[in-house]
Image 1: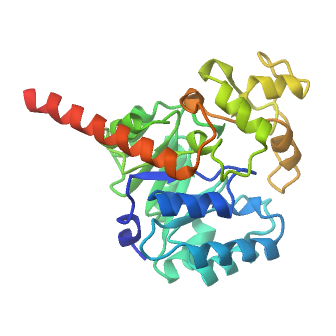
Image 2 (image 1 turned 45 degrees about the horizontal axis):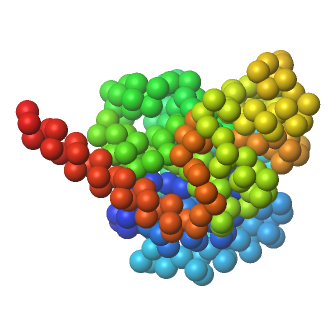
Length: 310
């Protein structure tokens, strides 16, 4: 299960794992449409439910579809990792993406069946540590990303990482159309990590009010703050206001909590990235991917014509 799984992608896109948003329906639809479907293990409230989700995904995503991807928290305070790794060994996702901690705890399990390990990183220090740990790829979270965000330009991030890493790079942050995907690939990325564009999909688990807010919003409706979870994240201003925060100045950083206690904050306060203005309707995943494909190929054709002039 090496790069042959990723070779089945119609577009070089990962439908990024979104907390309380990505579930089996979204993952399956993404894979069927030709992009990698990912979800965070924490979206399943119990290990039994996670087992059921993985069974459903494994049954419905065929060897001809794009691969499905699992996102695991590896922070030392997260107590469910050991049980989740047993399910990883059982269901063998093509790619496991680690977040909020070192990728080392998952390496042996994933490598044992030939899977790939990507590490979610927000700066060069973390990227170097992940490369030293032996990851196959990096999910470089850049400025403009929804949820927990980075602060580097995607172009600067890709360029700097390519100085010391020749593995896979998936870059995320404010990329919400096919032209952005083409631009990221031209800059040296292998894949784009795209979440917000898929948030209002019909297959998404997001509340309908959340989807409506995303459809109505644009980039000016996003604010970055650590006041909600203790980690800088991109939030929709109207949802902050509804929860009693000043949307323009949400306040001091909250206490970090990776044990699951922060789930209510994410249910009541909604995240999105700077690419939020690209979604103008609640659509099926297949429609979104078709649109991305048209934009991607049009951008590639335009780039080819411009390059040919030189």
